[in-house]
Length: 263
Image 1 (spheres, helix red, strand yellow):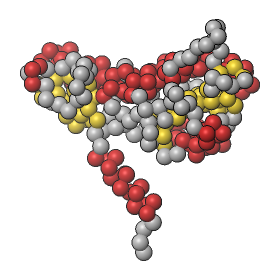
Image 2 (cartoon, rainbow, N blue to C red; image 1 turned 45 degrees about the horizontal axis):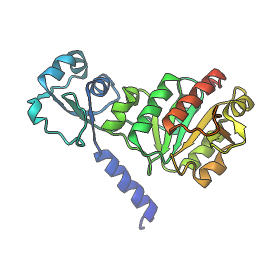
Image 3 (cartoon, rainbow, N blue to C red; image 1 turned 60 degrees about the vertical axis):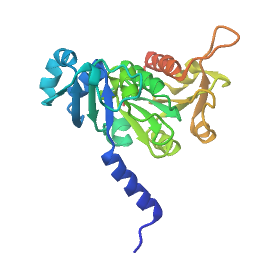
């Protein structure tokens, strides 16, 4: 019996993911990946100076680095990447299922959902804020989102190794699953009639999901419709705006001050 097309596509995507690797770069990002036991590491390229600075992490990883001349740092990084003489080829992290992480993960029952946020620097900054404020996960659609890259890891400043970043097949379906777990989903929208503070006050101690769209287009219609409530961050002046990573940090801070649920 011939397999359905969607099964064939899913198996093809799974095989592609198994072959996928990412080059992490910069002393901080490489150090954190070397000491992360969940990271599948393949190749470590260092200058002598970088190797001296990463001695303990190299020892902990059990890897043997390739020591190269700084003038011949021949690894496939984007032009202009500030690698500081350190690069690590590794496989993307696997955090497990959305249900396991969000229903019973560590920290407050608080998650961030990103709707088509593709800039790795923005996503890296969101991961960093999510770790600081103890969120269980940052969730994004597998397509039309920032994949795990060296630039994302460097901006995240180590948070990529510790903060679950779940890329899901369908964001709206995952939002429905979160709602079934008891999460209240608050979508940030500058034109909403309710403030973030009031929206959080209405949730009480229930788990909270903060939903943010890409700068410019904002939340897609289905994402917006799946939210429980649209809320806005009030500004002191007649006009104001924050980029998505700053808005996430403000919302996470407000949510943790409101003592969201720990269930």
